[in-house]
Length: 77
Image (cartoon, rainbow, N blue to C red; front, top):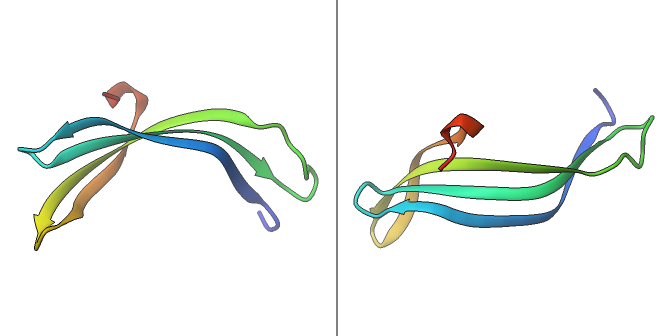
């Protein structure tokens, strides 16, 4: 919908899983979010949490993400 925006604040990120042999990591993000629209310019904030899985590969001394996905709560670590 036109004029809508998503706002996020108080975001924290934590590495909750790391397997250096497999090059896999899971990052957990906890924050407050709200959806702002022209009809509701000051909606309440709600808490949100999510986890993101990534496969990393070291290339020339730098870690690159070669695969990733958002994890559904039933797959959280």
